[in-house]
Image 1 (cartoon, rainbow, N blue to C red):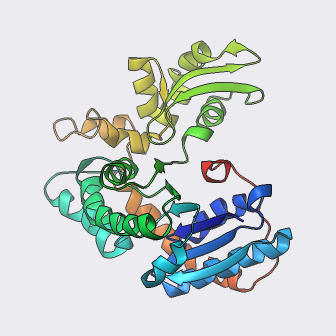
Image 2 (image 1 turned 90 degrees about the vertical axis):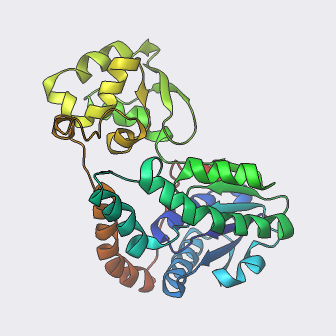
Length: 315
């Protein structure tokens, strides 16, 4: 059987998505799954959740939970390691990432890939990931690391340069880019074909067609219309300038490039609808929803899961 170790399993919703998907794969239905987290309460909730799905689907996975201090046991003999850790959490780290730079005029939307927030997040996360990778090298030398944590590019680059662990950085944007673009512009989404350069952050949609017909001319026409332009203003502007649509959302893209969040042109924020401080708002909302979700999952009612489009289970 395959062994899958999930680092950061207290991210219950994401663990459900990735590991629930795996239980739909014939060669993984009897997998040995080890869950790892620093938070015992969240770890327990994820263990109950995954055990419930395993039972409801009638699959034969073996599920174990380990606190981070026992990571060597959890990782031993793993074939695949999924990384979803967030070092420092919302408080104090994410708050500091945003509030301290803001005092000096540096504004951000997500702060997870480029800019000062991404650098700070990388500096506290890279050492932790390298520690995990040293364990992987020792106890699971054949394992593939599928890394979803942000800042994805900096973490993946650091791991590939500093360790011998085969690693791929993953994101959620590429697989949904083309259907979402058509949906925003009120174009049909059936029988779409597309080609994207890139597998994670800021891929480029090189081709998109429906029934064999190139959709780009109509996409570009509609993206300039007043009723659509505001829906994804940053990405539509990049498409206008470079000729291709990018896979990451406008709030991400606004801080991936140097042209939109500028102290010398504050009017661009309103013009392109850039949601400054978006990530802290998301964090607070998720924290508020955790208690309700925790109670629902611990009630242990039959829990179903349909396979989604995250790349992990397909890899």
